[in-house]
Amino acid sequence: MANTKLKTFVNGFLRENPLLVLNIGLCSSLGVTTSIFNGLGMGVGMTFVLVMSEIVISIFRKLIPSAIRLPVFITVIAAFTTIVQLVLNAYVESLYNALGVFIPLIVVNCIIMGRVEAFASKNKVGDSILDGLGMGIGYTIVLVAISLIRELLGGGTLFAGTALKIDVLPEAYRIGIFNSAPGGFLVFGILAACLQAWKQYKQNKADEAEIAALKEAEKPAEVEAPAAVAQPSEGGAQ
Image 1: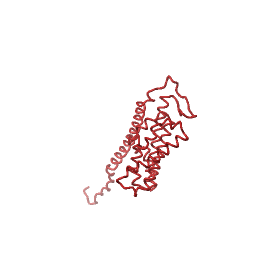
Image 2 (image 1 turned 135 degrees about the vertical axis):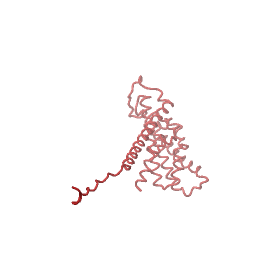
Image 3 (image 1 turned 120 degrees about the horizontal axis):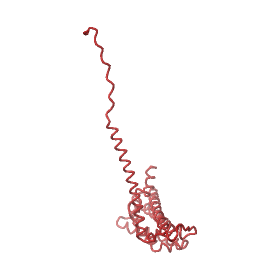
Image 4 (image 1 turned 90 degrees about the vertical axis):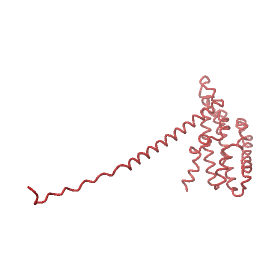
């Protein structure tokens, strides 16, 4: 049971990462990842909406008629998205302005709709919470990784938009393309390729171990030593 719950939680990190593996929710992800501050803020907001939506849908999954399940899902997601939007506008206005239209677009993000439909509507609340947290954390990690590379190479800074801003690269060494959409796709493609290469490496190692085990099993058993040769009888020829 514990292993199953752990697998549900970590599934979104690598095996079914919503961005690098499932390739869903890319539009908003590549649009906001120009700085670590933006990427982290978007990831936290998405995780909150995802977890809360999965909780509500899982609780009422047996009461929602299948004919109207999609409108109900969208209404629930929209309610929590509005909460995120209002909180950011009230307390983190700089992040609210930076994310802009991508905050309300959380409502139609394929990651949330996909997990609500595929998991929360079919599983218990506890498992749905683990699934939402795992998918949200995996999503946030990738967002921060893309943001880190783009902000460092494109803007030459780290943590821009916060009091912790650090200037790392002089302006002459900055690569402007990373501040644009093509730069986002480039970084995303590199990270996705690295993940696939790692998965292929692990698969090759597993295949080699399996082949070695099969060869070891096919080796013939050692031949036992032959019995002692019988001594000639006393009446034998001289």
